[in-house]
Every structure is written in C-alpha cells, then in structure tokens.
Length: 205
Image 1 (tube, rainbow, N blue to C red):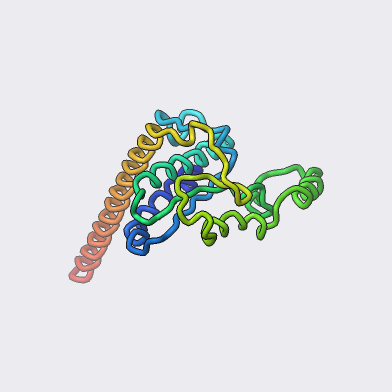
Image 2 (tube, rainbow, N blue to C red; image 1 turned 90 degrees about the vertical axis):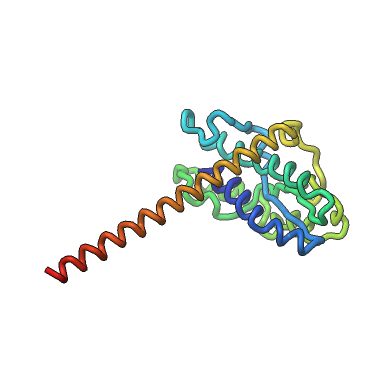
C-alpha cells in the first residue's frame, strides 16, 4: 500500500500533467519525500513486499522511490523549462498517525514530545513553499532539500540504473492497472446487458 500511495500515485499524476507543465514553462514539480529513505531499498524482485511485509521498511522503500523518481524525471525534463526537486518536511505535528495503536499510558508522553520537538504544520510547509516560490532555486533541478537548504543524498537515491529500472517498472504497473480497470468496466457493462435482457424476457413472459 505504501508504494502505491506514496510513489505510484505521484508517478501517475505527474505523468498525466507533464505535457501541461512543459507548455506552462517555466514551471516546477515538487516531490515530498523523507529522510527515512536512508533505511530503505528497492526490492525489484518483490516490489509489493508480498513475500515479506514490514510497514517501516515499506515506508522507507516508498520514500526512496520518491527520490529515484525525482532523479529520473529531472533528467527527462532537462532543458524543457521544468525543474524537479524533492524535499523532506521533517517531523511535523499532524494527525497523520492517528490510527497508530499506542498504549494509553504512552499517549501523554508522545503528545509532549511532539509539542517540544516536532514542527508545526506551518513550519513543515516552509521548505515546500521555498521550492515553489523562491527565485533562488528557479534553475535548480534534481536536488533534495530540507529546512530550505540543499542536502546531499546517499548514492542509492541518485543511482541512474535504479532510477531507470524503477521508472520502467512503474510504467508496467500503471499499464496493468489500466488494463484491469478496463476489464472490470467491461465486465460491469456485460452484467448490465444480461440483467436488462432477463428483465425484458420476464416482461414478455
């Protein structure tokens, strides 16, 4: 699920809008990632973690996928007036983890920690706004930012071969999903025809 929500959805939406972004140049594409990418790797032989599912690893894998996507998209759009950058908003005090099960005795402690050490939503949005609006980064592309500053990524997040392989795999998964949706829609229409025909036969009887 993490890969679908955090990477494939972004991949699909961005590809649908890429031509518009190029026609609207100069324009900017921003990808929200996380420094937790450091704990991830791309399991190309088990991309959906069907053999071994670990929520923390899958999240980190999806965040690494964000960075590889940024790297490859920036390469593909080079010279077209569209910049592509990624960012980490940091630890932000939101209700994103509202469904995480925590012992009730720990909740007051975690609440205090979040207020002392986490960013407010407004603070968490600063890097994104900086990349979206600042003229200082207008010509920068394929970079990673945190706290409004550029940071150097680990080599695995800028691996050309891995980025191209992930792009190809994402394309394949997108096509398969589209084919599955088409088949499902066709099956739905076929069932509707059968129901209509049966009602028609019943009326004649």
